[in-house]
Length: 329
Image (cartoon, rainbow, N blue to C red):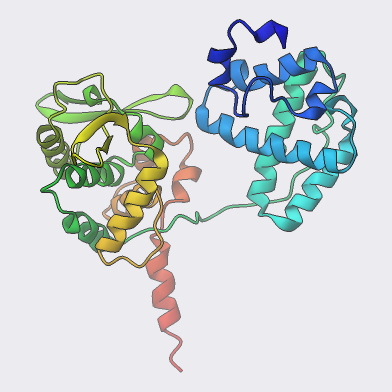
């Protein structure tokens, strides 16, 4: 596309496809304006990297389905095509996945309609599968299990100090893994003689939390032991050099953090298949079990609604287990 050639290298970093030139065939078939508008959807319209990646996958799969069903271009897509795709997807995948895919498709067509590429949004009248969530699927550990994981980490190494600090941050501040990994060294600071952490959550919201006394110790030991206190603008959680065993200047990727969490949980004798959200959910459940309120938990977790916080509340698990054990046969 001639319009983008001058700044193509910078734009390519935002495109969730192989390159600016690698527009899907159905988009190319709709003309140059459709191409430009399609690329702008992922660059100018979506700022969150994780959302961009998820929407790119959803759009790729939908366009591939349309090509398979001989839809000539994006401009030829009708509600029956979108409905047929969602129907097939619902049979093969979970309802939340189908709803997420439909949301991405709707947003794309909204963008194309606003850009006068299409007269109407063919996905606007398509209903997604019904899905009601009252309890989250995130595995939650007991306080004893979480403590066992933390205590099992060898903190004589930079990797151990880093991993303990990261896991503790999620437990004691209810931080999302994305917000934790985006932190700079300066986001750990002292206020009123107490350590605080600054998190940048979804939608660019800045969220500040005082540190639990254990988290305060773990973060300070990590900063001192890793020798990164003098680099305030550098990433807080970093990769480890393979040959040196020292902290690098490269931020720790989320996939590496996930692998680390699985490894540390196994090292603590935990058989539960944990994930990046496990320790956040564990902290919220422990807080509520110790008399904390749902409203305060939602504020600490930076949830817009207490309904979201309730997905992490697993206090009912103990009650259910007690009830099950009453079946004396």
